[in-house]
Structures are given as structure tokens and as C-alpha cells.
Length: 373
Image 1 (cartoon, helix red, strand yellow):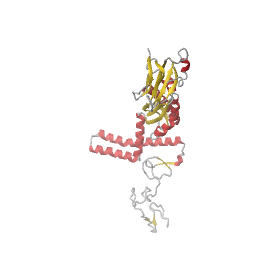
Image 2 (cartoon, rainbow, N blue to C red; image 1 turned 60 degrees about the vertical axis):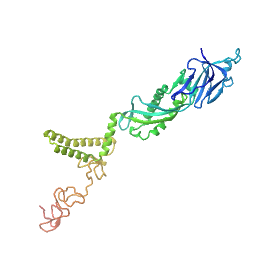
Image 3 (cartoon, rainbow, N blue to C red; image 1 turned 30 degrees about the horizontal axis):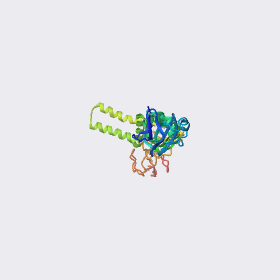
Image 4 (cartoon, rainbow, N blue to C red; image 1 turned 90 degrees about the horizontal axis):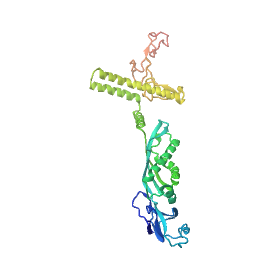
């Protein structure tokens, strides 16, 4: 047998409860002229005969056929509008529900210009509010006596992940561009998400992106790239590594085994450097740039732009400012002696015939034609 009510009201007892049905089961007899009390953060949806009749906002309402016209037919003769009506009332909370979380259950595969195909996991938070109580009750709640946020959170999370995946697939260029732009990305995605939420009588108040996580392999690749940038001059770094290995062996002599390790350690930088140069040359060919605009360093064979003054890989001077007049070796601009033959900069040789001063390496005297030995 149903309840007989003269006052309808509900005071929320759970922070995560969106709607509550009175009575929780079946329907209750409610007398015309009875009171419906709705608090500030609520609206009340009254249903008579299984059909929604009216929505009451905050305040005290006296239920009559004037504010629920649809029940006029239901209460016409033979009762003369005096019989109680059978009703159910849904009290729907209109407050903003905060701290709802979204995240990808499984990594999402996306195309990346730097890493090819990457698998990304995203996480964030959002807040919602019921703005169309009738739509919300009819499309989501149904006959549920107490509807809470955890009952809809999974559905909304899947909706967010689906729209986020579509948006990133069309707009993302590189995963490296995402950090630092979470606010802009969230604002760009929010309009599409709001349209989806509105279908269920909800408003997406706030939408936040907290992070995008990459697989461990991609994170290692990013760390390695950062280390390469921190190292700078690869040739100098490899020489330093080889010197460190030799010093360690000198401190801990261990026979041929350690010596073989040192030799391998000294050979590995050269092998790695050769592979880097090969990769650079292949990149040069694939990019369509002209080979004549680039030169190879005579010391490490690294590829450099033709107008470079120093090798970007080993630091060797590409523009020769001074050469030894005796042996042709490269000399520092301020060097006084040649590092190869010991020639003193500025000295000259004398012709044995006419005593004329000649530059070192001259084959014939410019004054008398004497052949220099």
C-alpha cells in the first residue's frame, strides 16, 4: 500500500547524489493543497500517472490544478477534484559536481611527426551541472531511486576519451608540443564536449587536462635526445670517454681482459661517430638539400654547411687562416712555430748564388733562376 503525503521535501545526505526519488519504490498518495518544499540547490520534478507534470524551482509550492494543469483530466468527475493523486517526485540537485576524473583505460595510438606512431595515455578532471532536469531524468536516471555521480562517471569518461582521441588525431603534430599547452588544448576540446553533455541535460562547467603519459620506450628516446643535446660536441665527449676508460684501467690493472675493454672502448666512439655521419648524409639526401652546399670536416668527416667556420661535431676549424710555408700544415693565426716541422713563422731562406731572400719551399730563385736544392 502506498504512502500518504501532505509535505514533499528531501534534504541531501550524500555529496555525490544527483537525484533522489520520493517514494523510493512505487508511488505515494499526495493531497491537492499539499506542500512541496524545494531547497536552493534543488529542483523537483513531479510525475503523475508515470508522466512528468511540472518542475518546481527553489521555494515552497502548494500543489493545485493551477500549477499542474495536466492533472485536471485525471481528477475530474466523479471525484470532484477532492481525491488524492498518486505521484512520484524526483529531487534533482543543481549544484556543480566537482572533482570528477577522466582517463584512458588503454593507451591510444596516435601519429607523431618525431616518433612515428606513439601510444598515449591522458588524464584529467572535469565538473558538471544538471541544467535540464526533465531531459536528465528521462534519458539517464529512469526509475532509479538514488542516482549518484559514480553511476554516470564511466559513461562520461568514455565520451571524453572518444572526443579527445578524435581531436588529437586531427590536430596533434608532435607529442613534444603538448606539455605547457594543456589549458589551450582543454579550451579547444571543450565546445565539442559541451554539445555531447547537453544531449543528456548536463552542462560541462570545467574541463582540465592534467597530463599525457608516454610509453617507457618513448620516454627513454626523449631522455636520450635530451642527453645528446646536453653533450654538445660529440667528438670531444668521445675523446673524454676514452680517456676516462684508460685512467680507470691504469688505476685497476687487470691484464689483457681490461686492455681489450679499453681498446673496445676507444674503438666504439669512432664506430658510433661513423654511424652518425652516415645517418647525417642519408638525411641530407632525403631532405632534398644540395650536396654542394655542404662540406665534410677533414678531421672527423662530419657534414657541415659550406659557410661554417668550425665543425659542428668536433670543433675543428674549417676555414684555414694560416698554413706553414715550409710543410703546408695548418697553423693557428697567432702561432710562432709550426707544430709539424718546427718552422719559425716569418723566417726566410737565402739563395746561395745571389743571396736573395726566398720563401721556404721555393724551387727556383726568383732573382737569378738558381735551382734550390
